[in-house]
Image (tube, rainbow, N blue to C red):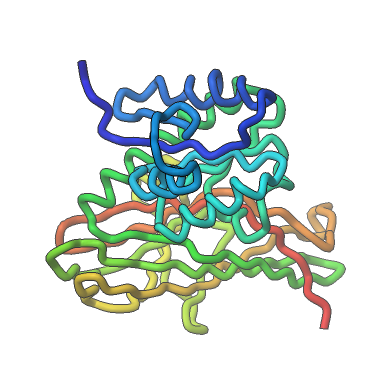
Length: 288
C-alpha cells in the first residue's frame, strides 16, 4: 500500500456543527490525493498537553488546513503560529468576513453552506499545495507574499487602482547559492507594472500561460543576482489598472474588490519556477 508523502494538520473549532465540514468536506477532498493524509489533534494519541501537541504538529506538518469560520481565537492564534513557521496554509471559511484583513491575500476558500463547494475547491488547493511543496524542494526558493495593499484614485469619469505587492524570496537550500537570472510577473492586459518608480518592460505572455488566461508578461528587476545560502531578499512593485470608466456606462464607486491570481516566474540556472500569487484586496480611496 502506498504511504502518503505529505501530512496536513487541520485547525478548526471542536464543535459538532463542524463535523460535516471536516468528515465530508476536508477528509473527502484529502481522500482524492494518495500523497496526502490529514488529521486533527483530537484524532491523535499523545501524552503531552494539547497546546504543546498542536504546536508540534504544526511544526512537522507540510500543509495547514484551517477553518476560520466564527473567528475562533484559538484557530486564529494557531494560524499565526503556522505562518510564523513558514507553513503552507489553506484557509477555509463559511463567511468571507471571518478572514482578517491582513490575511485576505492568503489562499482561502469561501464555501458558504455548501460542503460540495468546499470539497471541490479544496481538492484544487490541495493539488496546488502538493505541487508547491515539490517545487520548493526543487527550486530551493521560497516565495512568500507579505502584503498586497490597494489604493483607489477616482474622478467622476474613471476609477484607477494601484496594488502594491511586497514579496519575500528566501534561499532555503541547505548547501548552495542560487543565481536569479530574471523574474517575470504575469497578469491580464488590464494591468501595467511599476518598480522603483519606473515602468516595467512587458510583452505578450508565452503560449503556455496565454492559454491559462494571462495575457501580459512583465519584467521585474531581481533584487539580487545571487541569493546566498540562507539569504533573504524582497521584491516590491505596483500594479496599476483602471477598474471602471463612466463613458462605458460603468459605475464609479468608492470601493472595489479585486480578486484573482497572478503568476511570478523566477528563472534560475536550474530552470524556471512558477509561483501563483492569490489576490483578494479591497481598494479604497484614502481621504487627505
